[in-house]
Length: 309
Image 1 (cartoon, helix red, strand yellow):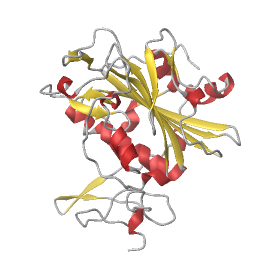
Image 2 (cartoon, one colour):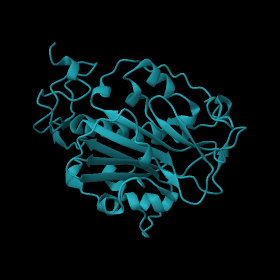
Image 3 (tube, rainbow, N blue to C red):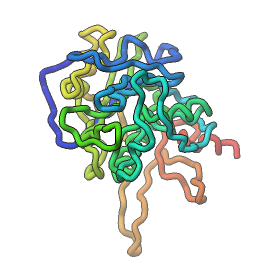
């Protein structure tokens, strides 16, 4: 559903995530895909592991939707940075030359790390239709942190449906020969949906395309506010009464942040005050992982493979 409350936050990015239990789906449910309310300019293209709504005017996807499961968090494919045009876009997608020398990152909408469960998925994540011009400090900072936070939730909840996109507006700055718009905002949404018990919970983020100045929790907004800002309907296939239950409110008790860290001074050094449930795994440098995990194994999703070492 779409409420009449609009959040106008200068230079922000939006993220939506959806979690579903009690059902098994190989692809993002078609009736949950975003629908443009005022125009028909979005070309819907279904890749093997994610679906996009490509906007030719802005030369990028208005949204990317995909399912992410706990099993898909186990890394199989390495990142190869095979950025390339998406030939499935009928009007032709952005090209490498559009980003060259601009100073902007080719920012993933569906993260490469979410697609590391197969070589094909990893390769498809590098289509330029899955990219948007992002400030380097944003892409490599708070945006990356948010992507990782979502993987934490996926590990704990078993299954998430994710929608990510830029806020595409008139008069945005453009780069490259194909005039790719540079968004001021991006979004991500997450929905938890226990369809057997008719229980739903969603969380949405709206973030500015600049270096993050606040914790991730500062950028939480309602799904309704994102719908109003983008003029899209994200869950039209779900009954209006159920939509209202999770689109107008955010229940933070359903979405625990695991990246919270407290630092205290000890012997003139900054040391991490770790709590219970800290991962038992080790990083590549040999240091103890500092992530929290609720998994019975005692390991976070990234270090579960160390369980039997």
